Image 1 (spheres, chains in turn green, blue):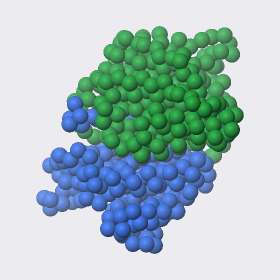
Image 2: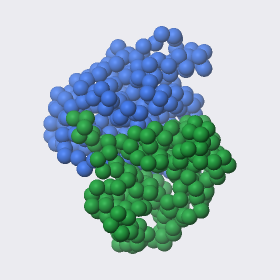
Image 3: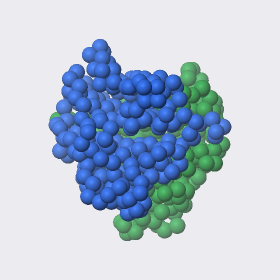
Image 4: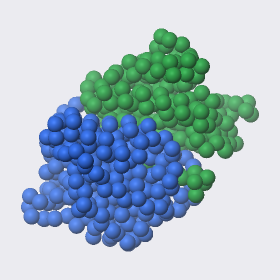
Length: 238
Length: 238
């Protein structure tokens, strides 16, 4: 079996820093975790918050702490550091090779999508952001690691794309169409979702946008791990 | 300008854990860092060491600590934790958008390659592994961030490929050929180097092998950040 993960990410229009932070780390007992945090508002202030949260989560995961406990710790930490005045949305997507499961840990009202083969399921609604009170619990979805699973998580900049003009983004239909028609790579799915969200915002994203797509396949594997990073240097630096 | 990074990584033959650990993290003041550590020997013991070193380095970099100071801290930390009895090779490759430089911080006698356009330069020799004494200093190479730079770093499993059969791996010639002939992607370069190293070891790698390739281009950018991870699930898990 092979696991493929892809990320596509763009800043809010004319803002030099994204309030969304994403890191992918190796789990000490096997597997990887994707940690995505959307800090309240946008720009430098939001970046400080999302970086703080992601750093806390990845350092705990690297020590072998379970995802749910890491999310609770990040919530208490943000609540303490910012006196409950700042909120952040947090998603942790893990491939746990110790339990052979896929684990999605969410403190984020924005829904996510999980597809087994072509059947797309939307999971959402029952999850709150971290930082504003004690005793905030994450919503955890765990299921066996099998081939032909697709998971899509994203920040609210994608979810609310088109709101300014009264349009709405039906990600479920888009994803269904892509999965039925062909066998798209995670990068193709992520790029298509991001491109559609940007179009709905007239190519001037009204908020930071990040999308993560994970797919498992039963393909024969060469046992080589690969990773790529594509980092555009913003014009302000050049 | 755009920066593209690719990694290819395989375990020593018939060993389930790699002693090489690699993480890529965002720098708090802009840019990314690639941290690669090769723990002494191979298997679980080496993995514990390399994970410990990489975790220390990425947590310091995430706090804004400079690369050289992070490498020294990792060295002192490993020396203290393991009473000077265990060694590890460490490379940090950073795109620093604050100083607009590329910084290579090495505690690794294995050479690296830096190419400006097609002129390949080998940097090596003057660097020692961390962990065995106090006051170990990293070798630091820093140069302006420009287009058409290629940097290749790798662990000694690549460098010593073929040693068992008396062959040697001339990475410089291979890289020169690739850069002259075409405009290869970093993933194509990393895959070619890893494939050649594996061939020299009769497809049974005598040591863990990891290669990292970074290329800068002057291409027009869509300002979308992208990342992919390709994780084969080892047969022992399925």
